[in-house]
Length: 432
Figure 1 (cartoon, one colour):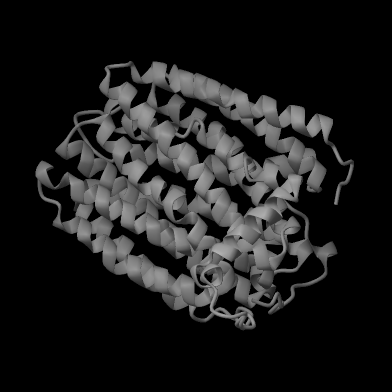
Figure 2 (cartoon, helix red, strand yellow):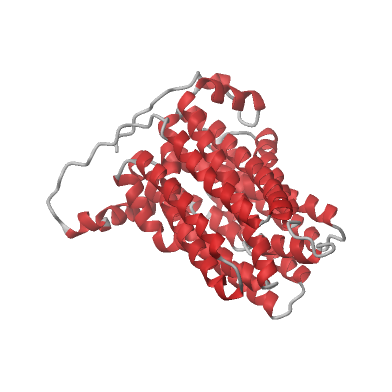
């Protein structure tokens, strides 16, 4: 695939990370990035309808924290299994075709959740979740690798900041609306809405102009080339030869050490703070997760700057913010206080996600980008799955949910300390 730009935006001096005017400017002037962004927003809002609907369904059928854990494990284990192959596909084939095909497949697949009627069919939820996420595993690296083809280098921080903020807004909106749909119209309505969102996402993505894919010159019918093994090996050697990129791939995995927090948001919303047996309250906590994730990068850019060195430093501080916020969340006396601390905790998480993604976009060559992002996703989801499984096991063992969250919060300190020590001893001094 050749790295060609489609539609360059205005000069970099017109953009300042963390400012609303910059987000508006890139959406107004970069037509194909705007369509790319809109396609993602539509798909994301449907995803959160799906999450809230399944959280409520599992609580109704099983009332088990472990059931929620297995759902999240099924969702997050697929990238660890299919990630290497997905990266090769994203770097070898037409990325636009890959994204549209994945959206259409998921639009049909999610309707399978409607078949679940009783506890004997819970296994179908896990199977569908795994398959749905397996398809997303091929979608995500193709999407991530495409962004630098739509934006110039100076726009990447703005584009990633906007993507992070809009993901957060879609989370807040999708979780809130998903909770409403589930509470008022039933979880089935939320699933149908999710299916429609994938069709709309594919339709919008079809109008995005990405670089024309050019097939690599033939090198003979070697098994390594046909299976993608050679491409995968090349990607591994590339990352190992770039220590700064290799370290960046561990940022999201560091956050995933405490990934069981995602289970506890559902447990706190549907059990700890549930009132009168009403479902859908986890939507409040997930909405506040989205709000925090939206404001986190903006505040960090304003306070610490938008250069690469400043973003690396901010990543370390963000781990400590998440740890402190979830210690307080574990002791929150009411839903109001819990929502506030969730907002703060995920402000830190969003800084880690957006800043590490931006730094990878700035550093990695186009021909390796899909493999790098798929490797990152495979590592983080493997760690996340283990954290979620252990959290569910602790719940089923009768451990107090507040004690579980307290321990998970302390886990954020490990990557925070490690990252801070690394950046202190390997500071490049570059602010580019």
